[in-house]
Length: 187
Image (cartoon, rainbow, N blue to C red; front, side, top):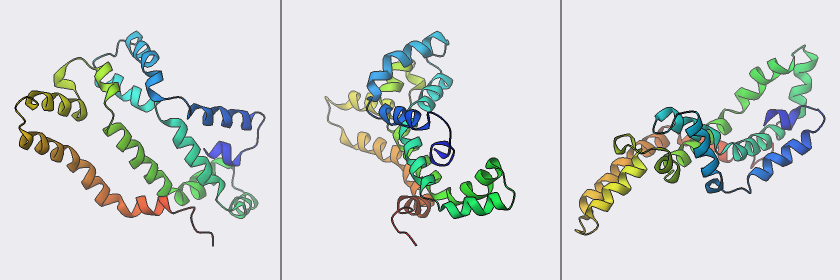
């Protein structure tokens, strides 16, 4: 995102539009190629394969949001740092990152929520029921009680599954709200 917002090089706009075009591709469309790739690495039914698959997905939206955030930073900050003798790397580490903590936190929470709620990818990449993540496990747990309509155990499972996200949000709520409103008000 920083590269697209602040650096100048040939083909930057084409690359950025290519990344934005990736937003138009549904995630389910990439499921079969991703499965074949993870299978070729021999990582099916492993947590590492699942982590790699999750790390590969959803990056286009994050790059888009970071680019917009970095582009909204005042150019005067960058000019002052360069006049003081800072190179691009030092500008990034000492100016951009500290100012971008709210948006970094917001995108981390956003990506964590999408990974936590993912159902199809773990179902396709994992075959051992003992290794299923909580979303797939809850659906399988629910399917055991559908004919008996035992809603108590099902809703207890839903509640337990939502507690880590609730705790995370309570501890990071200020950072999340600050990141959501970071570009709303210009001073």
